[in-house]
Length: 456
Ligand code: XIL
Image (cartoon, rainbow, N blue to C red):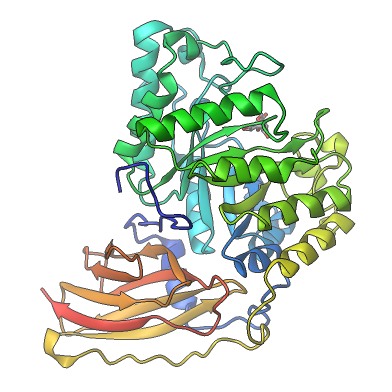
């Protein structure tokens, strides 16, 4: 899909990496078990957002994954993650040409084991550059930046739903100008060059421009970003989305025209994402307003809060998040959950676990048999594993029912038809069992159908 025009609401599905890891093995093994209480639709942030086809995510600090109180909330409430620091340039390429993917891969692996979507943050930015890059300029810097984009987007190909390709490239205040930086001084076209390199490296990720203080429609900075996106769309520069960080901390406030800003960007033909939300003292009304504004704009695809507990926040003294330092839900949590549920009331009985039976017999002619094992079910998504017998190399065609959508796969090589609803999974040497996560997107009863199993 190497172009900039994408149908509204069409999301990329993850072509997950094909590594059979211990974690995925465990997941597949545990996959036949429906955990008690796990099918509580609309009682968590992620499940409630999924009722309207959206996600609710959080920034994650990988070091905190060892904190079980933290991970318990993460796994229960959220279905999208952004690395708070681990995918920044200084983290991934500390020395020129030496890439360090360990922590970022750990986060992706965790997300994948939980069926969470991953936002990549960020490929090109004036801040958190490694020392070697800070000292560069001109063509050398431009090439180093493009190489970083290419290497990193290639490394994570198939695992990232959205990339923040460029972060914070505009100046604050009334100028509407680009922010001065070493990258900006390589030439005004550095942003589009980064987007083109990212598209080439990972054609299936959605590519976003991300910034703060672009929430108030009347601000010069908002208008300047708007004009850039309009220009990119008119010239075919590959851009799919705009991320509004929406840090209503550090002196910034929720503006009453926020919904106008979201819908105005969306009208340019890009999705909008609220990517780093936090609000000073977490007032319920402002959090509720943000959710309602997103729900009112079809192309607002989801909300990511910038941390889980107040104690995890980069601005912890402002207590801006949905959980307190003890991991308890704050009033703003209830306001957000209620707002998400009012967006689109759940269809059907949300507490009834989806059926576990599934037609498993494909047409016999293909020389192999594919057997479905229903896997773990969460409020908003479920896992499925498929075991092939009768052939050691094979392709299995799986159809899902929209608006359900496969978000992650493992242990096979998937390709997709143009509708995005039919996946052909080919063996890739990882054994005879492959798996995938399906987002329910409001339909909690449909289950994938095996259309065929073909040997060879
Ligand atoms: C912040 C992190 O939360 C901090 O831990 C780090 O020290 C600095 O960066 N805009 C962004 C984020 O795009 O990457 C920033 O994250 C917050 C502002």
